[in-house]
Length: 145
Image (tube, rainbow, N blue to C red):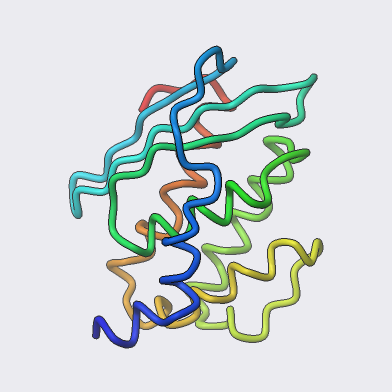
């Protein structure tokens, strides 16, 4: 199972850790913990109007969650709560339908999410992939962790 889930592309994104680090002076920050697997992520967000102008994260989690947070670090600038919710919903749907392999995203920058195709066979790991998105969305809504 580990070899199937932790493919090279996922490991590369996790190792890149794009956006990793604490951001002082952020407009929003929130820590979310998944008690089922121990993943923990803190997101730091700056906004210009309703758009993300800066994003960083501190992720203490499995490789799947780290890779997902890294993709957010690479792609979230310029996004809104609404656009991120649509990406999150698409990601969840395509994980559940086992259809990430051929998913064409409305914005090509999100195509990196297709690396999570192997997770589709492991429903108990979906939250590992979606937790960074859920954390960022909660922060944007002013919700608690």
